[in-house]
Image 1 (cartoon, one colour):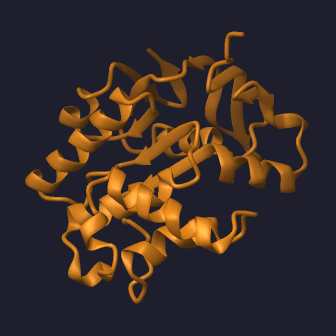
Image 2 (cartoon, one colour):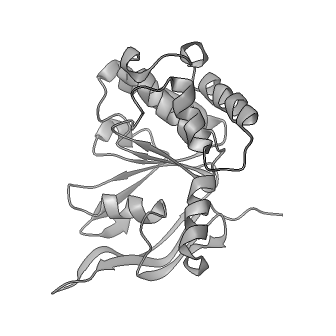
Length: 224
C-alpha cells in the first residue's frame, strides 16, 4: 500500500484579521513526498515564518486543508493537533533552545517527557539519537561545554528521538561559523540519505542549494 505524502496543502492559506486583513500566506497547493529534502527561501517578511508555523502545526490555516501523513489536521481538536505535532514533526531552530544546566542526554530525553514512553526506554532512545548524530561520547556534557555545531547536533537528536515523519529546520546554521555549519549540513544530508524527510527554511543561498528542491516565498506566495 502506497503511503501518503508527508505534507499536502490543498489551497492552504493564512490571513490575519485586521483592518485591512493581512494575507500572510496566500492559498497554495503543495506536496512534499516521503524522503524529500526541500529548502524554502524568501526575503525578510515574505511569509517564511508563517509557512513554517502552518507546516509545523503551530498555526492553523484560515483557508484550505492541510494533510500531514494523510491525516486531515483541520478535523482535529487542539489537543490532538498538539499530540500529532509531537509525534510526527521534529523541530530544529537557529537558537538551539537547549536547557543550559542539563546534559545533552537530559536535553534529548526531555523531548519525551510527556509521552507514554517508559523512563528506561527514553534513556535508551536518547542515547541512540545522540549516537545517530555522532555525539554519543558527549552525552554527559552540558551545552556550555559544547561547540555551536555540537549544540545544534544535540538539538537535531532531540528532534529525531520521537522518530518523526518530518524534520522541520528554521535557519539551522544561522548561529554557526562556516566549519560548524558545514558539519550540520553534512548531517542533514546523511539523515536525508537514510530516508528522513527534511524541510529547511533559510536565507543563505549556500544552504538553499543543498536541497533537492527549493521553494520560493514572496509576498505570501509559494512557488517552486
